[in-house]
Amino acid sequence: MSTLQPDGGEMKAITISRQYGSGGGEVAARLARRMDWHLIDHELVARVARELGIPEQVAVERDEFAKSFIARVVSQFVTPVPTAASGIVQMVPEDQIVENRYQETLHRVVETAADSGRAVIVGRGAQAILVNRRDVLHVRIVAPLQERVAYVALRENLDVDRAQERVQLKDRDRTRYMQAAFQLDANNPLLYDLVINLGVLSLDQAVDLIELSLKDKAQWLSLPAEELGPARGLTRYPGQPADFQPPAHMTDTQPSS
Image (cartoon, rainbow, N blue to C red):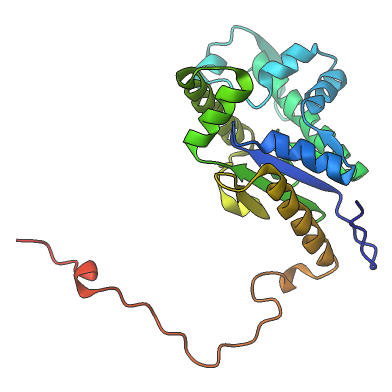
């Protein structure tokens, strides 16, 4: 599928952020197959590992997981780093240096994938790394907890209790990762062009919606940023919109006696 527009603009990538067990990974795989785009999921971790020259398992351990503050503080390994101004040696935890290198390499790998084009990038904070790129469509896949637990129980052959524990653990890990690495809340809808709830919609319907949104966003690549937004193409209301007036008992702020 091509998203090339007559003015030369082209959508380069799609990021898929997903709640664990929402089916977001499967949506990404089906989307990439249908569009004949490159799916970048666990492969991204392998690329980071190669660039860092570390075993892939080490990169996997850091993938979408942020160590607790206590674990960082009690790290026994430190590296002397002289400050530029004074030459005073500061003791910087080795774990922090490795984490910084990991994040720098992750940014570079994600940006390179987007620059190459035709990429469906799953997770890894790609929606934050590529937040300022208008040629990238950002998608969030969610589903109610009960449905996510059922999905994980089926796909991973777990009983319901273990599946729920796994979903909640993964949710916590991903929340901590986004906060630690990007100071962002992955559940903030303003990070995305499209949020899809798969509580009722099917996986293939989600793929349809993403394809449609990609084509629509591509149409506006050449439009100046200040002309974007919900007011685009609209005129003034014919009159002053009426304000909703809730019942008086709902607005009474007087303390009860």
